[in-house]
Image (cartoon, rainbow, N blue to C red; front, side, top):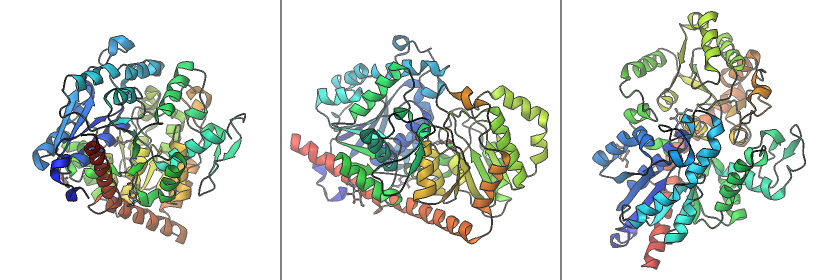
Length: 506
Ligand SMILES: *[C@@H]1O[C@H](CO)[C@@H](O)[C@H](O)[C@H]1NC(C)=O
Ligand SMILES: *[C@@H]1O[C@H](CO)[C@@H](O)[C@H](O)[C@H]1NC(C)=O
Ligand SMILES: *[C@@H]1O[C@H](CO)[C@@H](O)[C@H](O)[C@H]1NC(C)=O
């Protein structure tokens, strides 16, 4: 435990966080940073660029004032001109075109010098005891080597993902297969079968040699790290945590679900919202709506922000929600080909037809606040890990609609390993640049939407059991980060480890 360590030893502990500039990545790392800064005598710095700071500055200020945490933001310049990314754009989700993705990774590699400067010029003071950085910023490993500081990789996913990737990569079973072939991921505690095309980009590299090189660099960078921190918790996937540590020999600390750091409603409501800081009125409208429905009766549907769902598919989801005749909140955010969707909404009369029992949110939604309301009975999600975990914490069953990257793995974890979700029935991944291939096609009809909703919300023993399991996992998640819980303890072990490392060097 931290408290048993002589205070003199960890007086100068300074953890430096370097998150990836993308919303699903920044917020979990900021939460982790806040948790760490609540420990005695630990100072935490979050290194980011000016346009990425506002979304979490207010929440850090509260942390400093209310909890006397030693936590600060340290700014570096985003290398716009060197990477030929337009000024005003400093994050993956604000790139004017995904064609600039290669430039974005170039920009990330250029962060090495400014981070080194922070250390050399003592701006990061005291001297960092540990760098915790997003695995997509591999240049940090060079900084760590130069200054002889331990580096810990933040992986935004979970051990189930890490193990699947590790085993697939080393077994090479996916090589020389066609997109439509199915493979069983080797060496796992469960029988996990995936279509080849559903695997993440590492196994579906496309043809862009720059991106292939970037991914290889990210993979290489995992070697030699002091360990890995994940936003997951032992009780969720203990067999996978253990097995991943065994096959890699790497330390893994499960510190999640970190979003539970935001206990008060201000934080829940403001999370990730930098545009409308004063929309209490709108938030109240959602709460009022939820208050007006019975426990477990409302569907919450949100397919994420970087979504690749075609308008036709979105329309089918909307009509599916309509035929369920159940109340719902449907978030339409950053939808691909938004104009077509707007046109349909204005011409179809959908909103008018559902106005008594449906709310459409076009833009940012206070997701954690909504999910934690007792009238929510199901969460239709794209299975991004951040959202999946928020769903697990809220104790409601999930309806899974994965699209790409790690989302198909997360679907398997939810449906097959912990059995708290129902697949809506997506078969084909829509990889970046591939939108037109399946783009207009509808993979999930309104009937499938309705079937999945009924499977999750309907009466019956199986349905009831699934809801109970979901609730149990929600409780376990909450316990994990409380004092004495597994994630709480893992954080203590992490701090202790770094103290020992620190002391042995002095
Ligand atoms: C997770 O994603 C949801 C929506 O997909 C968003 O509302 C929320 O702020 C995100 N949280 C984190 C931790 O990024
Ligand atoms: C302060 O820390 C406690 C737990 O140590 C937490 O519950 C509370 O939310 C924190 N306050 C703020 C403003 O985050
Ligand atoms: C995290 O906690 C679990 C159980 O509480 C423990 O078995 C595991 O060794 C811890 N992990 C690390 C890396 O210390």
